[in-house]
Amino acid sequence: MSVKLENLKKSRDQKVRELYNRLVEGVRAVLDRADWKAYLDMLARFHKYSPANVALILAQYPKATRVAGIKTWNSLGRRVKPGEKGIRIFAPTLVRVRVQVEETDPETGEVRVVEREEERLAGFHVTHVWDVSQTEGKPLPEPPEFTGRVSGGEAARRVWDRLLTTCPFPVAWGVTTPGAKGEFNPRTGEIRLDPTLDEGLRTKVLLHEVAHGLAYRLGLDGTQFYLTLGRKVAYQRGEAIAEGAAYIAAAHFGMDTGGYCFEYVADWVRDAEKLLEWGEAVQKVARALIELVENAGEKAA
Image 1 (tube, rainbow, N blue to C red):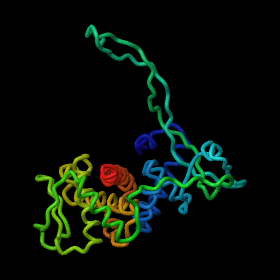
Image 2: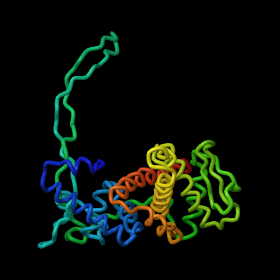
Image 3: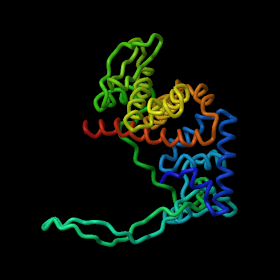
């Protein structure tokens, strides 16, 4: 569940407000180090956590690799080591409420009002998780690996082949902008690549441009923000999201991620709330990008 900053700032829970201040401090530390890569690595590692909680984990326990609550660790036959300090994160506070909804009888077509219970978000509270290194006990089972994941150049070739089969945008050779490695045209929905790219780089550029396309479809790309943010910031947002999502997907499939550039992105993301907001968009686009490649593998199986 996404953690909205406005909800945290307005919370009546003092612990939530204190942790929010810690969150902002932690994000500022990431910004001071210009360590966008470390943040993206955390987003890739903890894709089920909100960007706010990922930033908190990074600030409190940078070497974390797998975190869970104490009940989860106990169910896996492990316990938290004595003296280990928990990592504080935000968790949703849900309440059950009775609501009235309209239902249509499929036989008579009659519309009637019925009452039922639903869970509603009432706010957030502070909870604790621990990294696997802070626990001891039964060995953890290895998570199942995606069958298409291989190392090195073979990974790039596999991703290239699979992405081309499921890419929702036509891909052509030849860019219209001098010096560009790739382009996504939101008006035509077409991706164009520089034909001189080597095998490894072309896959990274394709991931980046497909990420642009997916972000555009999801309403997260910079082009939708020209009027509210201005052209420059909107462009920066779009590039940060596309490069971040491409990096996470490349890392997920075992590609060499050394060619990704973060210095220019880090220079753009100089605001804590902006980094968290953009991080949420990066997560959504990265998930969609990974699903495209994995779906191609399922079709081929």
